[in-house]
Each structure stands twice: as C-alpha cells, then as structure tokens.
Image (cartoon, rainbow, N blue to C red):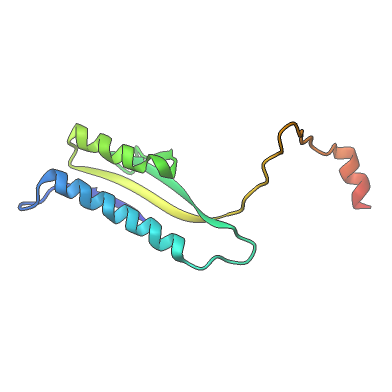
Amino acid sequence: MKKTFQLIHSKITYPRLVDGVKNEVRKYIKRERRKELPEGVDFWDFDCKFGDTEAEAKVIHLAEIDVCITDIETRELLSFYIEILAKRGTRTKKPKEGEVIAPIPLELKKLGES
C-alpha cells in the first residue's frame, strides 16, 4: 500500500475520517498477514514509511503507525502519506541465558568450505 490520504470531506467530520484511515490500514495489514506463506518463511514482515508528503516520508516500525496517525490528527493536517510493503520474514533463535554466540572466524569458514 502506497497511498496519500486526504482528510477532507464535506459531510464526514475530521475525527471520523481519521478513524476510517486507521481502520483501512489495520484491514490492509490483516489481509496481507492472511496470505499463504511461501516455503521457508515464518511470517510476513512489513517495511513502513510515513510522512506529511511522499518526499518527507521516513522509515518507521509497524507498531508506530497508529501513533503517527494520531500525531497527524493533533496537528490537524489535511493529508499524509503512508507506505506499507509486505516482505518475507524468518525468525532467529534467541541465545539462551548465559550463552554467548561468537561469530565463526573467517579462516575457519574457508577451511570448512574445502
């Protein structure tokens, strides 16, 4: 989803428009997460950008979208840009308590390849 939302309407109040935008974004994310996962993928991850305009958009985390939209509401802006793109995600194991994961030295990697 790459979209510039306009928060102007002759009959719908401003807070109602903002709530509608939040709902549309949540529905899009739910729809993307329901898609079938390709083999070797654990979950759907998202790349997100948010800004007053497309040129000013900055990278944000998925969890920050509601906060950013609320900020737009407090500033009473009439439009904003949002970009949410799904990408493949794989989980990584967390180290157990007290376990240290050290990188394999480059020399050992080269020896193991032969």
